[in-house]
Length: 403
Ligand code: CTP
Image (cartoon, rainbow, N blue to C red; front, side, top):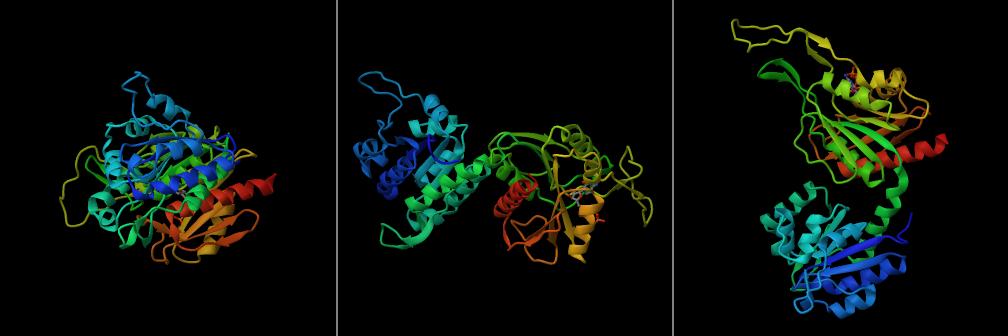
C-alpha cells in the first residue's frame, strides 16, 4: 500500500521549523496523498497561509469560524476526514495543551476529536525542549498512543546547538510512508495477544505475582494494530494505557481468568501471541480470611496452573499461527526448541535473562526467534517497540512462506 489517495491532515504550530512544512507537503502530494492543513495563530507568523494553501491545493484552516461570514470550519469533519493527523512542528505550548486536553483553537479541537493515528514532531529551543515539563508532556502524549517523531540534535535557530530540532521533512515523509506501507500487512486479521503478569490470590490481601510490566505485549498490540489487525488484548494487572487503534481490551487478574478469556477468544483468532508471564503455580487452598502469623514458619502448597499456550496448541486450527514466549536462563536454544515442539506452536520468541536490559520491567529487550521450520534468528538489543516491529515482520514473513 502506498500514499496514493491517503488523506493527511497536518497541524502547524508556532515554531520556526514551520517554514519546512511546505516541502513536506510537496513530497506527500507527489506521492499521491491528499493534504489539508490547520495552522494556529502563532504558526501564521512563521509561514504564510498563502504558501501552504498553494502547495496543498486546499484553503488553510485557522479559525473555528469566519467572523464576517459566519462560515464554520468543522473540527469533527476535519478529524473524520484524516487517515493520519500529523502535528509538525509541535511547539512546547501545543505539547502542553495536547497533554492536558485543551480545546482553545481549531487545531486542538480537531486533535481531541481525531480517532485516526496522530504523529507529532516537536521543535523548539534546547532549554525549552529539555525542561522537565516539556519532557513529561511528551511522555504523557506517548502513553495516549500517539507517535512521537523524535527531534534531532543540531544547530537551532537561536544559534545554540542541541536537541529540539524538528526531524527533516524527508524523514517525516518516510515515517508517514512506512506507516501506510506496513499498515496493510495484517488487514482483515484477528489477533489475540496476552500481556502482563497474573496474580494468584493466597488470601484476601496477598497474592503470588511476578515482575512483568506488560510492556512487550502492549508494544505488540500497538505494532499489530498499526499493521491493520483487529486486536483482542487480554491483559493481566498492569499500569499501561491501551494503544490507539482497533483494539478490544479484556482485563484479567488470575491465570484462571486469563485461561478462560483465551479459550473464549481462540477459535476466532487468526494469530495468537502469548506474551503474558502467566504464573506456573497457584496456591492449592485459597484462604477466605487473612492468614495470621501463628508460627515461625509457614508452608504454602502450590499446584500447577493450566498451561494456556499448550492447550491452545492442542486445539490449534490448521490456518492459525501461534506464537509463544520463552524466558530462559540456561540451555536457552534447546529449551526454546523443546517448547516449540511440546506446545505445538509455530514461533517462539526467546529472551534470555543473561542479557542485561532484556526481560521483565525493562524498556529494552534482546530476542532470538525460532520457528517450527527450524529457522533461528538472533536480534540486537532494542526498545520494546522496535522488538515488537521485528516480531510482527517475522510473523508476516512466516505467513508468506506458508502460502
Ligand atoms: N504460558 C502459558 N500458561 C502458563 C505458563 C506459561 O500460556 N501457565 C506461556 C507463556 O505465556 C509463554 C510460554 O508459555 O508464552 C512460556 O512460558 P515459560 O514460563 O517460559 O515456560 P513454561 O512452559 O512454563 O516452562 P518452564 O517454566 O518450565 O520453563
